[in-house]
Image 1 (cartoon, rainbow, N blue to C red):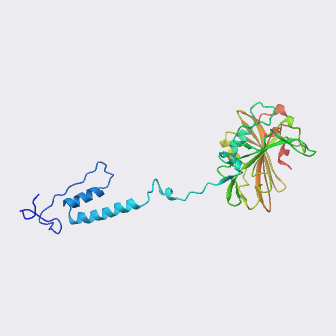
Image 2: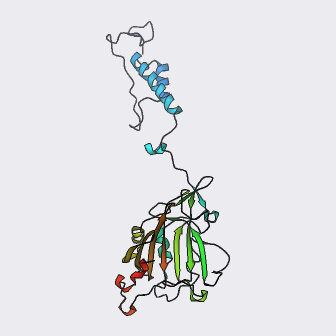
Image 3: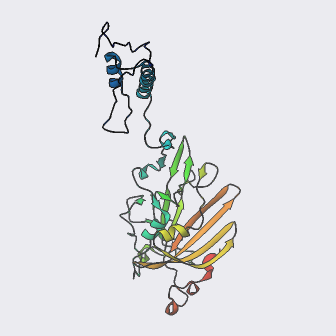
Length: 307
């Protein structure tokens, strides 16, 4: 290349572009997706004197852009990366820490007795996500009614919706599973030796400060969990449905190939303070005429939907 003072020399900066064309080096990248200018190539071309005034201006803008990109926080994926993630709630009670949430239909399937079972023992779902309270197999109920009970806590969601409780902060509220030796249609309990007669499932606990009801609680009410049951592989047949004082009851016959047919009663109750719902599995609910029971709702007593 001619140096200054030799024939053919032309200054790049301030020279007339009309006099002659100055050879330009073309930048080719191994990856076409990469920018034509990088910090290194821009600096080398400026120092080597191979750039026109217009190219130097473009290079300056490019360097500024590269600097801004390097200083900007990285954003990956999509625009959702910058979205604020809702905080994960702590779980009440502490016994549920570290446990996974179950869809309500999955919990009901877990509590359905095995196919052919003639007796529901107190060890039903003993080793499961349910965190049983107390150190005994069951608790003898005080008073003249007698009988026995067993209860535990479990994390539950209904189609992704969870119950919550507000104290010093908002908590995810666990659900209670309660076994009882009471029989369907009876006012009194039977002795523990006869096994479990029913299992109730409801948001919250049994104490005055954790019953899921009132302004400090949310998610206490839920509709009949038919979609949740079907999702768990349970077939559902309606038995009856009707209004009761302060609420509503619906009874269903649940069947599944590896479990015994089980009657489920969904109940909603409410008042001026709020609305809550629960489900109860009636293990001892028998067909009115067993010889005709073929999994049909008409085989069961419609009084299940009454007071």
